[in-house]
Length: 229
Image (cartoon, rainbow, N blue to C red; front, side, top):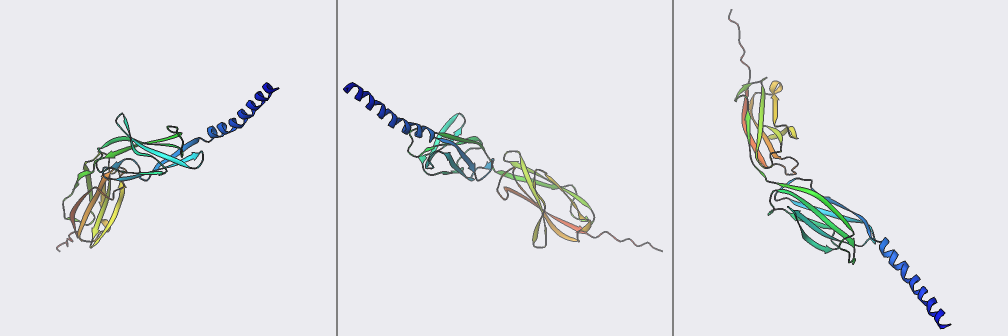
């Protein structure tokens, strides 16, 4: 009689413990979203904010942020409830990195339950921009003048914005793009002195500009020739 009672008690204990174990396993994170506020690449010196949000699990998460340079991963922010990390790249070298996050339920002893990674490039600032025109100043109204810009330094992948100043006002005449030339058809221009300029930056940079080129350019009325009778 005592033997049967012991066996019956043993099965009751197992049935009480098992549901707790299964609930914990089902509570693991199913994933993690991982985003940055700036797109890759960015110039050295940029401050880039990375944000993680756990998916599934308990809803109380903790995160560890990591950066891979070459073949080595380094922890840059230990596990905590803080879901953001800011990378101040002032002292970073140009190159390609991987930025990652480990996520898990708060208090979990797992190394991680979900992982997010992204590739991120850092580039050098441009050191300058050459800016030339195919015709010298001044030209007569109606001339078509071609302006060409070439970035110096940086990645070698540049974008340019062309601008013209009339009086005290600068106007954008060609938005940022990889096109390094702009043609000014002056048929509608008034005689006078203008400034023509270009902003240059690494392609994809969010800086307003990294290098600037300007030149002064004048236009005159065409000569009116009166036939002698």
